[in-house]
Length: 381
Image 1 (cartoon, rainbow, N blue to C red):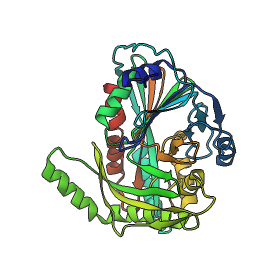
Image 2: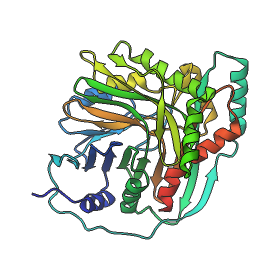
Image 3: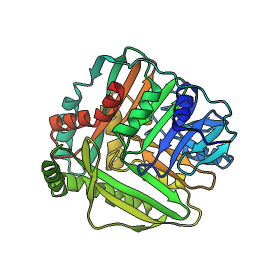
Image 4: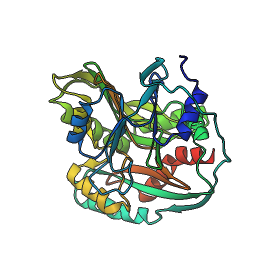
């Protein structure tokens, strides 16, 4: 039996009720999964860990950002073992292969008819900044906002996958389809990867824009590498990762960040590697790391309470751990940013920004808009 073509995988994804597509940033691991052999709807990491021990298939899904109630079948926390998984790069098949592949069915491009933004977001953020300026124990909080879009039709899922690969070639890709919803993320950020006893994570915090002019783009990168506000934000993230993982792993951490470039923005980036201690698995690392200060804040309890109070809707899988776990315990979790949730003819986009005492609310609002660009471009085709 021959391995399916990319077109066959895209066609099956677009017509399946339950499916997943996951690709690592370097595209050394590309998975397509179809159907449901087992599933669990929960945000309880302990219950997921017990359920995982009973599975002999790769498992995909995500934990919700926090414990806020969600009506969505995806956003409240969902993991599933597909009936069949195709590992494209290695040409491997887990489960029962598909014998009859559908033909690609195309539809017209959906267009955006209405856009609703949280325009009061900057005023709420100003109040948080004032709190941080008067109370120096409040160091950072990552505050997100959402954008609601109405579309003329349902999204062409084949085109969505094509555009995801052409527009965001250097990002992680995660597309989860279940319960009539599709969660899409083109994130630059890995939470953790486990390969045997070796693990890798990263500190990603501090952002500036890109430029089509190479010289200006390099100047922006150099300015970011020397910007006190962004360096402080990045330091919070790296130090917190080191503190949280001290008992679980032996760490190797560079002395200074480097630049990670994505199509619309560039970030400060510090890769962190090490070896797992005995009896530690990937879900242990995920729950210990999430949420990092790149997604929550510092101090954490205050930041999480502020996120709940200031954001109009729960985050669900936005800024949450999403990924894959293989039967041998290896796997990779990423952070569900640069993300959207599609349901029929609506799309919900998400973006966040790290708020410090010297932040400017209008600039942070503009940054969140910039971070929505990847998903806007996907919808516009």
